[in-house]
Length: 263
Image (cartoon, rainbow, N blue to C red; front, side):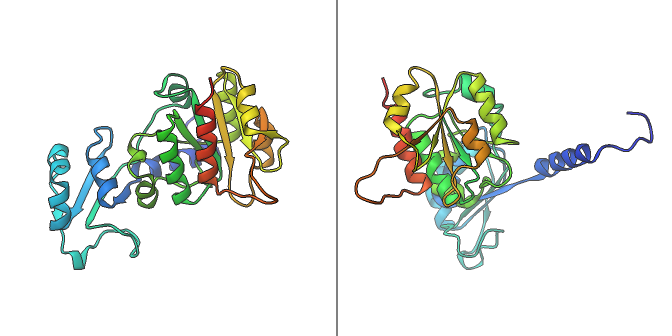
């Protein structure tokens, strides 16, 4: 670029977003979430605040981490988390985890050739529960768009019950582009839709030996049109009776189980 030439707006926005991301930190809270983060060598840890009671329960993890905790009065636990958060006297400021590229995780990652994609699922409790199920059933990653999805937060980590430290959670710029990239890697993308004609069991069987991507829509709106079009097939979870409904985290657990049982 010539001296004095003004950068395009999209370049300026991208650079600004990168700078903001570099400064971003997350406050994890609760004994389980803080313990798992302290024990995770890949997690960049910044500040640890504990009550005496919490320290007694986390002493081994604190020692292993090499951190020097700030001791706090339980009545004056002043860290920037929601007042209603059940922190159990433990809070840890960290940098978000960097799991690497989509290709690295999807192709050579640990676990079964299975990923979960979430289309604008914004509730951190739902995302945390999906991460927990993904770890249980051996999925390689949970993938979501960077915008309009639940970011890495203390509430998400607490619901994930430690899975956030071990289960790759990739937030991509564009979900449809990530889906197309997965298809080019050989993944068979199954979109969950309650009105689809094909059952989940039949869809999984139809994938053969190909790696599977399970695509989950947000509660209410479901899958967006572009997301639906990028799937290889839409499938439904059969239910008994005249009406049946599962929230997205339960639907993800059922789908993960079905996909992990093939062969």
